[in-house]
Image (cartoon, rainbow, N blue to C red; front, side, top):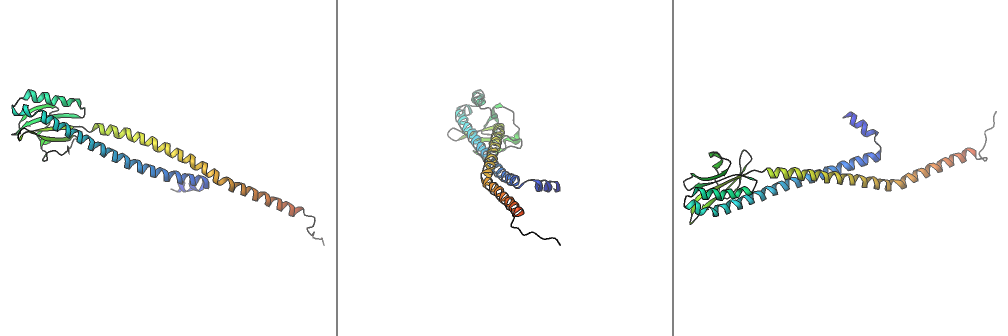
Length: 220
C-alpha cells in the first residue's frame, strides 16, 4: 500500500486525472457487462427450456397412438426424431402405470424420474434440464420425460463474454484517447498563460536589475 501511495504521489496531476477517469469508466463498463452477461444467460436458459418443452409436447402427441397400442417400436422411432436436437441426451415414454415403454439416449435412474410437476422445467443435480409432459388420448395414457444438457448455454456465455471483454477494452481505449485529447485542449491555454506569465516576470526582473534610474548606494 505504501508503494502504491508513493507511486501515486510521483504521478503528475494530468496522469492522476487520466488514471482515475479510466478506472471509473472501466468499473462502469465492467458492471454493465456483468449485468448484460447474466441477463443474456438467463434469457438463453428460458429459451432453451421453452424449446425443450415444445418438443416434448409435440413428441407426446405423435406417440399417443403408440402408447395406446403399447407399440414400443413405434414409440422408439418417435423418440429417435429428437436426436436432431443436440442438447437432448435422453428421452423416454412411460406407460400409465409408470413402467418404461420406450427410451432413446442415456439410461436415467429412478431418481431422475421423480419430478412432481407436469409442464415445468427442473434442473437435476448433474446439471441436466428435465422437462416432461403427459401423453394424452381421450385422457392421460402415459408420460414423456426429456433430459437435455445446458452445454450450449455455457458455450454462448463464453463467446458473449469474450465479445463483451473486447468491446469493453475497445471502449476503454477510445475513452482514454478522448480524455487525453480533451486534456491537451483544456490544458494548452493554461500552459501558454503560465509561460507568458513567466516571460513577463523574467522581463520585469531584468528591467528592474538594469534600470539606470535605480538609486545607487554610495559607499562610506
